Image 1 (tube, one colour):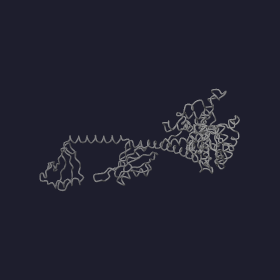
Image 2: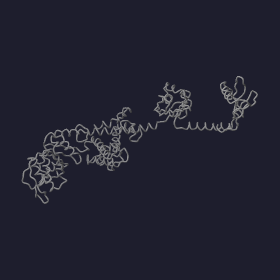
Image 3: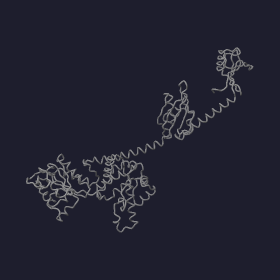
Image 4: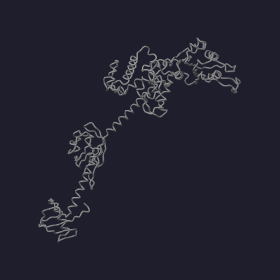
Length: 562
């Protein structure tokens, strides 16, 4: 009210003005008497008198009966009231428009104001809060703790995560309102809705768990007991093969490793060498089909000085000499020419040979392991490979089956390569479960090498975190059903029979992977009722308990690989 025209008045019982204005004395009344009169009126609980021009406080004072008040312009008084009302309405609008819930408590912790958003956020009706103390709300279990009580106790702002009896959670912050003397006159508490933040946090946590799950699967895949050299497998065929290879590693006999191109013959030979007594000795590999025949002989057996034009002075040792006391892998042995087969036979039988252009017999102690993707027995029949060399090389034989004959290994290998190329590209891609049936039922004519190349391609071209079927090459998405049968091999099946066969295998794989109708429908993006109907039609078993299935989902992918 600064700036308003207003002056003090002092009157006797009859209303005669004894004093008016701000001078030090008037009508014989001193300043000290006026101050004493003011104190006396306040002490006697004076009655407030209001008129359009004067506000008086009446009091019974010993030795004096009169009035003290202020003379004001009534129009200015009404303007001030209107301004205050507007300010109050503005404050109310701000209070109610806040996205946060707001509660106000007095110095005793009694809640005096609650906005409408408080009930929306917490689920607590305002009637359960307004007029109650913070301590009552805590004692009655309406709130888990009280920011108001913390502020009143410490005199400082306080924030924490609060739980309500409705099961909801919010972040609340209590702030003190202080008087000029520094005392708490009220506490304002903001209640912030954390629903969306909690949902986002849950999604992030789920993503982390998913990545951790994949990481654990891959980690265990690479730490297999019979897998010190990184051979990833699940199938019984590979388990038996590696057990056999482990036994072969304990002897020095020649080994012939056969199998289609890309099945991992070199990995198995590595396994044999590293588990043998020669593991600390040299290990050389040479592809007999990658070097011209004229050069291959000198690479294997070495040469003497002057053996041919351009020969080094003093000659050069071949791989058999360099591999002395160690192991040598002759990959693609079926590409070896017949003259070289003769020279190799002498080495296998006698452990001795001559360098190209040399006359000095050289003896070596080297273990020979041969590998090929060709049928050497048929080549013997066709006179393309020496029978005596074949029998000497095939004392111990290992056949590595193609990937299509051990489909259990496909997913572990895919995840292993996914981890490998994630590391190289510094990414964190995951394989969508929708991709599993397509990977499992592809023929993989290039075997493990083809799968490795595909996974590298998918990691590089996929611009999402999850690799789905849409990133597969078109040749993997056409002409085959989920059981891996060529369309041309369907024989006399009708269109309806072929479609039913496809559908049955499709839902069989999906239900086996996701277990429950709800999860299957969600992943296949179809109605829940459709999954139930198809399961009944084809006699497929759905998990009856969602909670067990949910638990199983978290462990299924990991356990499925062992």
